[in-house]
Image (cartoon, rainbow, N blue to C red; front, top):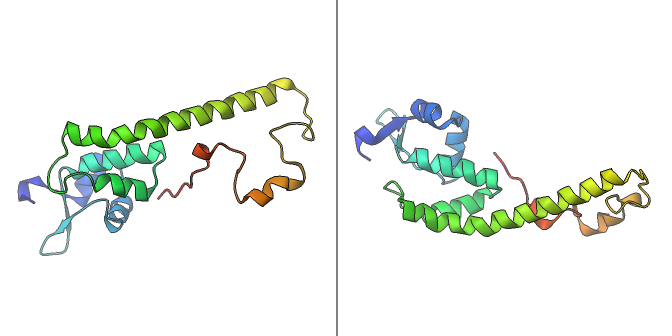
Length: 155
């Protein structure tokens, strides 16, 4: 990395909006690369800011750290990604977003119908779980659409 391209941890924190601990975490997870000075201080390449913006967007879309890592491995490690690089990765998000939008709309419409009916009968409501009979299907909110049940392993 060219010395003029290097950014300190503090500079990256200020520019990216991520905390220092998040940057160190992403480095440990292999999502960011750094070099060290002779005194052991981290130096980040300037293109790390784009990777961090990608990580933020990917987390907001709901991608797991493994999915983010896999996507970032498709990018060039030693140069700033081009528009074509980003386009190739973001195409895969489109179906994921469409799936999540559809699931959220089904959830919204189901909740609206349930709230709007005014019956207040948990014994008859299709949104309820009397006697915990869905427990046999596993932990968590198993009645939610699969796109809304993905594990949230956020840092």
